[in-house]
Amino acid sequence: MGLYTYKNPITNVEIEIVQSMNDTHEYIDADGLKWNRVFYAANAAIDTSAGTGSKEDFMRMTQKKMTVGDMWDVSAQLSEKRTKSRGRDPVKQQTVDAYKKHPLVD
Image 1 (tube, rainbow, N blue to C red):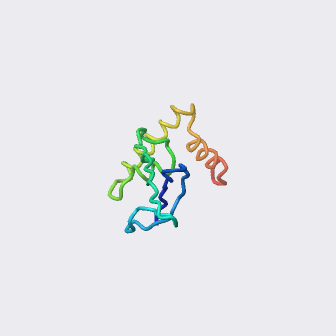
Image 2: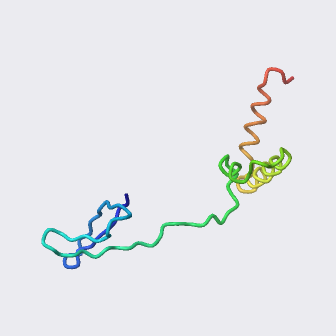
Image 3: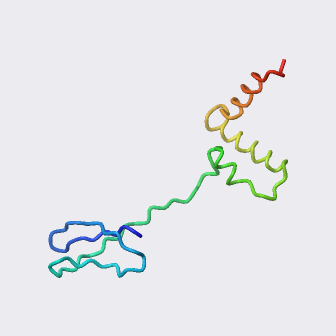
């Protein structure tokens, strides 16, 4: 089900109607007046950056048949991006801090 916008040609009042994709996309009110359908520009964007270095970016950039070394390379690239954009890599710092708190580390 989609939400479709219609505009009254006389009063310019807009309403939104829920219709199936298979419905005829037109609206005729109780007085028999056919309203005009309103079309909006697509609200889409193309990912122009290589990623922010988030967990989601790592999952998107890795594939099932990659080796562990390939994944480490992707991880290093994302770490470098985080360092360049933020001045430091918070993910790397969090890992180092957690390692320092480990009971088996001197």
